[in-house]
Image (cartoon, rainbow, N blue to C red; front, side, top):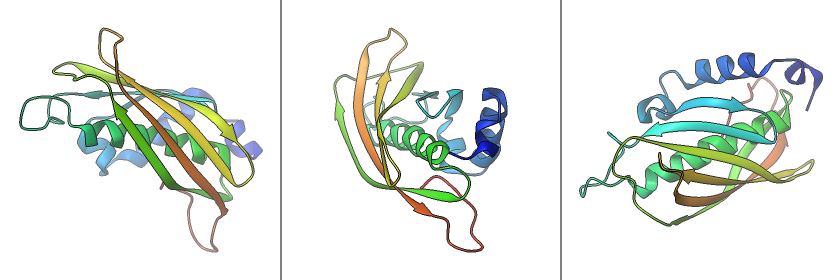
Length: 151
């Protein structure tokens, strides 16, 4: 990662990500970033509004949270002159969440020059694991004239 992102404080990184989230699925799902570094990204998401017809947290919502966290971690790892694009995600749903907030914690598993993988654990308000996911992103040079973004 280049010095320009490394020099930002965690609060500055969080503010930057919140700005990027405006008007996106991240905002629509109510995802709120809490902690951000290349090694660990934490965010919360409400269950309300992200349920399936039985009133349980939709499995796809857990995957959106997981991919959001892992993608932003990959972007931080890649740095501003490179882009991170998701190439594989999987998820195991362990238990249902019915209300409150879920918390996703993405932890880097492997980070190299061309690929980065994160494990993302989603837990309910009691700290019980609802979902375990793994995301792998490809790191590429930024095309001329493009801006870096999570993908």
